[in-house]
Structures are given as structure tokens and as C-alpha cells.
Amino acid sequence: MAGFKLRKWSSNEPVVIEDIPKEDRLPTLELDKDILPKTKTLGVMWEAERDVFTFQVQQPLIYNKAPTKRNVLSAIASLFDPLQFLAPFTVRAKVLMQEIWMAGVDWDDELPQNLKAKWEKWVLELPQLSNVAVPRCLRRAYQRALNYTYFQMLLMMPLHQLPI
Image (cartoon, rainbow, N blue to C red; front, side, top):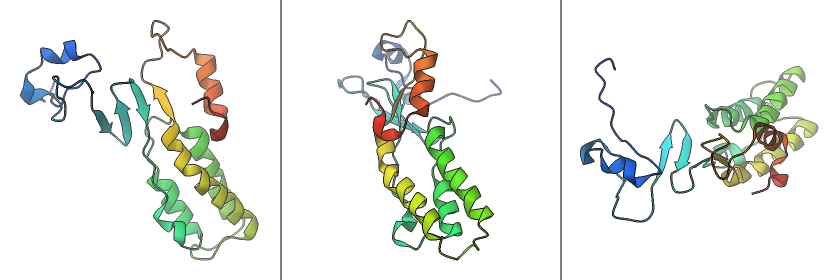
């Protein structure tokens, strides 16, 4: 393992963690408590108790500022999703960014009304991402598993129609 000592172990099964020395466990992990901790790694929150990935999304800091090309790009870039679970949502913002470029809007000019309306709609939907929970395990043996087709369907649905 190239000399790296793996630390901060966690699991959704306390039996697995019992054999790992305390100094190598996730510091917030307490086996004597009934609730397993939430762990954030690479911008994705893992809820061990439910064994799902969730997202903590903040309204963009530019919410109170005039929407400009610079502010829109900054807000899109601040939504970190390395596993692309939120791609159906983030791609809409990226398409909007392309429309802003094609409209010839300068970096600090306010967006035209049609693009501003699309932007405001996207920003208003942003907090709904906190309701998205993606099962970590997608294999059929998992009792609440999603088959691939159903998972694809969920990714293509508008956020307000997700069965959560």
C-alpha cells in the first residue's frame, strides 16, 4: 500500500469496526451509542445509519447579487459532485452557462430577463438537493436496492417529482 496507513475507518456494521483499533477509527465513531455518524468525504455526505449518500447544499453566496456570468459560473463551480449523482440537476446550469456565452453577455453584465428567469428557477430548486439520498449499495441482494433502470429513471426526473 505504498507505505500509507489507512485511518478513520467507518462502517455501517458495528461488528466490522470492533476489530479495528480505536486510533484507526473515525474519531466521531462511538460503538457504545446506537446512532452511527454521518461522514463527509469529497463533498459527499455518507449517512452510515441509512447507508445512503446525501448532499448538503447552501444557497449560492451570490443569491443577493445581480446574476452575472461571473456569479453564475461561481455558483455552478461551488456545487462539488465528484460522483456525478446530481448530474441531471447540474447539467441544466451548465447548459444555461452555454446559453449565457452564446448570448454574448459580458462577465459583469446582468443577465437578460429570459436567462435570469432560468437562473432564478435553478437557484430556487437548489435547496431541494438536500432531500436527495442515493443508496450506497446498488446490488440486488441489498434489501432496498434499486435496479439500474429505476436508478436511471430517478436521475432523469425533475427534483420535485422524486419519490423521497
